[in-house]
Amino acid sequence: MSLLEDLRAALGPAAVLEGQEMGSKPASDMSYTGNTPPRAVIRPRSTAEVATTLSLCNAAGVPVIAQGGMTGLAGGANPSGQEIAISLDLLRGIEEVDTASATMVVKAGTPLEECQQAAAAHGLFLALDLGSRGSCHIGGNLSTNAGGIRVIRYGMAREQVLGLEAVLADGTVLSSMNRMLKNNAGYDLKHLFIGSEGTLGLITRAVLRLHPPPGEITTMLCASATYEEVVALLRRAQSDLGNIVAFEAMWRDYFSFNADALKLRFFAAEHPFCVIVESTASREAIETFLAACLDDGLIADALVATSHAQARQIWSVREGHPIEALPNLLNFDVSLPIGQIGHYAEACTAALLKRWPKAHVSFYGHVGDSNVHICVSTLYGPGEDMHSVDDIVYGVLAPYHGSISAEHGIGTLKRPYLHLSRSAEELALMRRVKSALDPKGILNPGKVI
Image 1 (cartoon, helix red, strand yellow):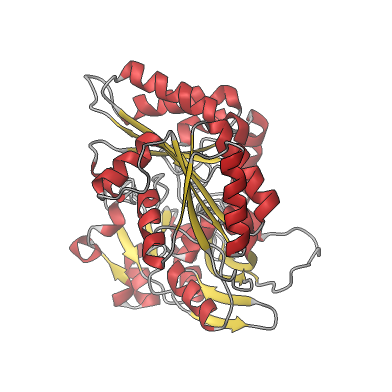
Image 2 (tube, rainbow, N blue to C red):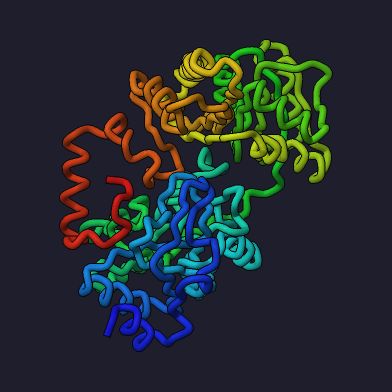
């Protein structure tokens, strides 16, 4: 029998999709750089069925690729046409919420928002939060070590995981569903799979760490004149206010583009930087803090949201949906030491505009966790494509010893530039780990390394 016939016999005919049955979703993530559907889509309903699928594919030497919500931006879930795609859509659900240990056991195909809601229903808080919360899967969040807007207080996705279950290339199920905060019994194997983008194994279940609810969150929008003042505002907020839940800086071009498109105006004048600060401090403490920042010249103006609706308006500018309509839009996700972000933004903008004088270039980012995002829209000339932009963005970054990926992963789009952020020795060790866990190289081939 052929591999697909073997898979149908083992999993049932409804679990194997081919041709038009697959739909368009498996061809590309949200980078829209994929244009070839996979050979077939397998829809397992359990860890055991994932193990069976991988065992059969490994024996046949056929490559596989895991797919979740397909919300990535690095091409990490894009097929080349030869792979069997394993969709985790049916591997979905909350298995348990343990209020005593403040943990949650979830299946990999569960949307992040569903996990957040389940935690809230038990009086707890799942700290991981992304704009794609309604469609991204927890398995994809972990396999890319997703970041989001709460990293400054709670850390990356990695910090939200106590244990997990993964299936190796040969079908071996590695179940390390630890529920304790402290467990130093040998290697912490979960970190092999978190952030490895499905190249070392497929995550099927996880034990997530939960927190007490943060309490009432107040949203502020502050205006500053320089990047140095933005950094000073961050440090003042952390020392004087504490309880900072989010700190999001937007350079003028980014803020103005989105605010104008949304027909929103928050200040009488435009400012070089607008910063969203969220805190659970008291209203009195916030007013005292803002007054001191105004007196000391750290901010030129400030607004405190007086309703959830107004807070959502502020965040709608940060989420930046209007900017997505720009032609050939590329979204970059880099990190570098906080104090150097302003210099990098100036140098990167100058280099891009020198090459494409009419390009749109704008910056925004979490800043407090050293992450900045770049939006670039330009019309390519003959012989130019998106990699011409990549070369400049990452080339300018290299002297700062930053990372070409702060939170979106490497996938295929950033793989040619990984050497700018990892040494030859690090890359060699990555290849050794890959070879040890996936000797036939069937797991998400061509991605990361």
